[in-house]
Image (cartoon, rainbow, N blue to C red; front, side, top):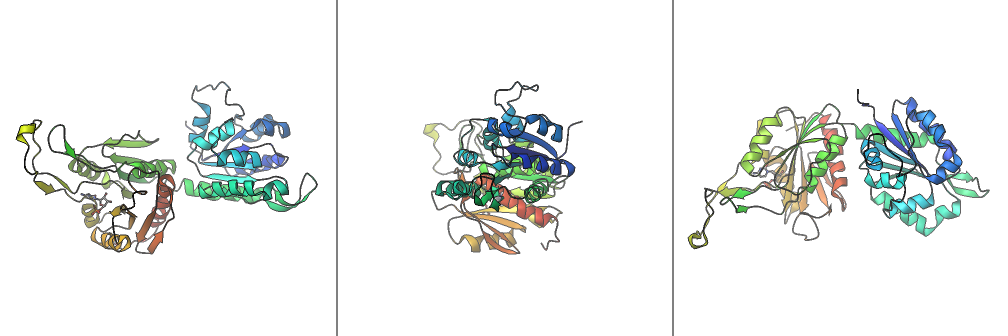
Length: 402
Ligand code: C5P
């Protein structure tokens, strides 16, 4: 039987407060979580791996180079298993390393490889904590979405008095519980996501397409799967690999996308239509490659069905999230689209800005629902995916007027 418990990966670094992490692990195990501990070498100078192994009843990871029985790359498998990762205590050194993406040990490699929410509970000498460089590193982690459980004031192990003490264990455990609840909030739900652009054939080798990379839709699908949903991802052509844990249907055209979506829509609780579906297709695709000499003066087009509007007009139980790529009046157009297409939420972005939108790693979007408009700052598409699913999960539990 696979272990279906929510998995918390607890990172322990080399500070004297590491002894308090024993209590944290006990508290999380008592909560019913599966707890897997990963330690830095320095942490093992303070507390023995055997202590954590005994408390968690799970193997403890320290070295990147240990033989793994399942022959998977261990930091990657540990990173994938994590529903939440918490580092307590986290030293100035490890904060600096993860702020800069370094991966020279098992713990930091796991941090970089995981998509799970990250909680960091710093503990260090007051002067180390107050240094500009540490504060900048902490700010960098926050900007990436990490939750920082701020250290408290008091007498420190080194004899100084001030900020730097590890936050109370109960406070850290509470941060983990909050993150874990949110992270598994889609268990039992069916989620359908569309992604990428469509290719509308002109002849067997040419098509009309668009610049959609599929990144946002893939991030939403992967995040929904991580949060426990059964996920169908219907995607147009893209170079992205299948996201972990999703059932992927690859299509070429808008008509194929429509068929794949309609076949699954009734079973779904949430449908997120991030695909950039071509609005038009060549009225007749040539069955043979069109020769240069036979170049048509014009290609006549016909309308593709609007899949989102079709789902919206059918009603149905699913929460419906649409996207709007606009080049002007983003908010007003998104509001109009919300009503016209019968959606519960529109994710709108301004594609006239060359720095944003198609193909980029970051984006800035507006979330428009009947509750109002929320303007998110510039953030990675993976974080946008989390924000969209947070709002959609809340809508799943509420009465909707559509
Ligand atoms: O009308 P517009 O194309 O701007 O609407 C965008 C939204 O509608 C996206 O969520 C997109 O996935 C969806 N759409 C669709 N079928 C189309 C065109 C757009 O489902 N033919």
